Amino acid sequence: MPPRPRRAPFVFPTLPSTWYIGHMSRALKEMQLMIQKQKVDLVIEARDARMPLTSINPAFEHLLNIPGASAFAKRLIVYNKADLAQPEFHEPIIKALSEQTGHTVLFTDSRSDASIKHLMRAAIRLADRPLEGPEDRISMLIAGMPNTGKSSILNALRRVGVGKGKAASVSSAPGHTRRLSTFIKISLHPPVYIHDTPGIMVPFFGKGTKGDEMALKLALTGGIKESLFESETIGDYLVWRLKARCEEEVGGYTKDDLMKALHLPLTTTLDSSTDFLLALADRLKAVRKGGEPDLELAGRWLLLAFREGKLGRWTLDGLGRGGEAVDLVKEAEIAAAVEATGGSGFTPAVKGEEGDIPKAEEPIQAMIDRVIAQHLASIKAMDVSGHQEKKQLKADQAKLRLVKREALQIVQPKASVGPRGAGIQSSRRRKYRRH
Image (cartoon, rainbow, N blue to C red; front, side, top):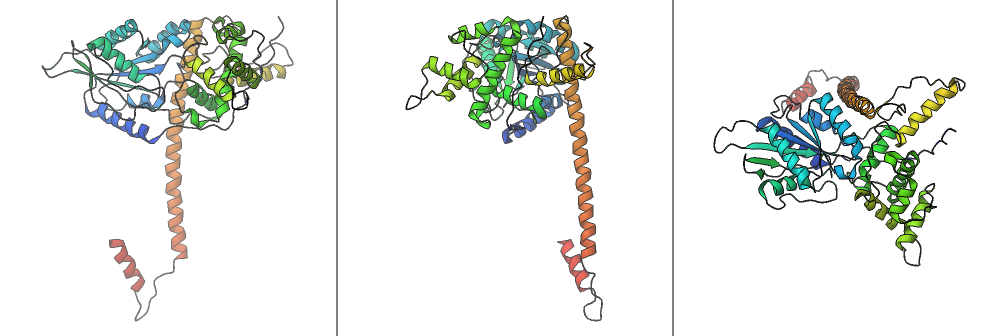
């Protein structure tokens, strides 16, 4: 079989390195205080099933492992929007994460009563304890990154648990919930109450291609504001990912499947995002004044179609299969290593991350085990690196203060000494120091 032509890389523009706004930092401190000072029997962490790795927030690892935390080891990881993700990865991810973290892991769809009832049973089973009196109750807290569906899960639990309507406001815009809610009842027997919390973004997306791609994946799924990017950037990236998905036939999805879903001619090209959006704008009759095709409107329509699952169930994180931009970087390293051997066919080992391209015969469970272990290790390494950087920054600042003091002592003249002016300057300094 001839080698597959190498796909052109996606060219990332300048992207934001973070979207960690003020209310998120405040909310994280409030959550930490609640877990430390109050009785919280269970923390439900909501993640996005389409991004099983990207939606892991290291900030919650600190939050749930702080000294004195009543919720330590009482944690339920819920991958919401499971109906939009590829189902073949659900069980392998549950097995890998459960074994490697010790936490209970579920995939759920907040719009399905059957799915939410399963979640309710699991949450009560984990949080269950003897009640200490008629006023005692089981307390839970739901946390997660923006737009993972925390409020939707809470409302669904309330709907199936006590038969009541919405208690938490819901929006497709990230950052909608800005403060911790009051306790909301979701079960009568046993009495269970839950707090809704604001979405907390990762403090830092990361460096290089990996960080840029994380930011764009979060934008695709509505995790961060689209206004942080140039209007065409998200559309270009989505078209590039669609092309990669069709070429790799991820989940058996082909270019014909995509064109049929969009009601476009099968000959429509994906080689150029502009040409593709022109074809889509023509099909949608999206035009500006004067009859010019409205590519921005076509791009927004395509983004909404992806978010609603009209382009098929799709897990965006590569999970070792290929398809992401970070995979191309790895492919280039492997290709360079092969060329360095004179094309002998021997591929030297390449130090990798979760974007590594696995061997074709690697079983899916082994692949997911490896990828998740590497990702969790990278989170720990990032934490250690960040801690060391903070310590080094404090040490550098202390040295800088010392240098400034020494410089002032050299420049500042000594106090004059004489029969009339003796000690005047030094006495003034002592006076100001006392105040």
